[in-house]
Image (cartoon, rainbow, N blue to C red; front, top):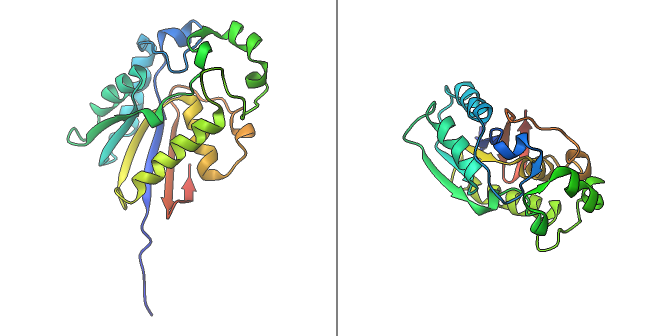
Length: 198
């Protein structure tokens, strides 16, 4: 009886730690804010949680809060694994509403507040755009990192897009899910198809 192995690509998905603007209820989008003291603690906790996993590489959004989180997490991991920042992993671009207080943001962007995932922010993008760019980027990593494990540090909107992309759950439902700053998701995919998510 013949046996064959299934090539598997595993990635862990984490959210950046709390920022100073998160504390002030500001919708940052692609604007940046440094981590708060709690945010640095969040990253430290994630690093300790993942310390026994051997990662080949870390990919992070190119926004400072994700890079800062990855730097803290990495101290608990295999220091030899490479770290690379990519714009495909950025948070949603709120366009003219980047870095707007959430109260103002939700008043002016009712379509987004009502989870219209196709709503495109003026000079920005939609949640569907985020889902496509982030999901396709991860697919591009699969062949290169076959049978290896990588870590991805990104943002809540991007995480929702990735979860929807691979689980095939409707983005409208996934977008309602609350994600704290210690979120860790584990995905196993083969030939672009999800085999396991926890």
